[in-house]
Length: 96
Picture (cartoon, helix red, strand yellow):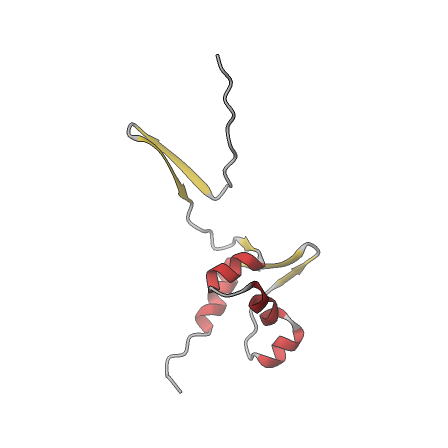
C-alpha cells in the first residue's frame, strides 16, 4: 500500500466528515484564549504598532483606559475575554 503524507491543522480547527465529503471549519474561539499582538491587531482591524502603543507606559498616560496586557518573557500576550471587555468599554453611547 502506498504511504501518503498527511498535514497538521492547528488545534483551533474542527474536521467534520460526512457522506458528501470532509469539511474543515475553524472552531469557535474560547473566551480564555491567549492571543498574540498580531491576533489582537486582527481583531481590532489595526496595525501591530497600534497595539504596542496601547500597551506602553507612555501610552497609559495618553489613554485613560489602556488595553489589558500580559507581559511574558516570550512577548506580549492578551486574554481574548479581556480584549473583548476592553473593546466594549471603549464604546461611547453619546456622541460629543
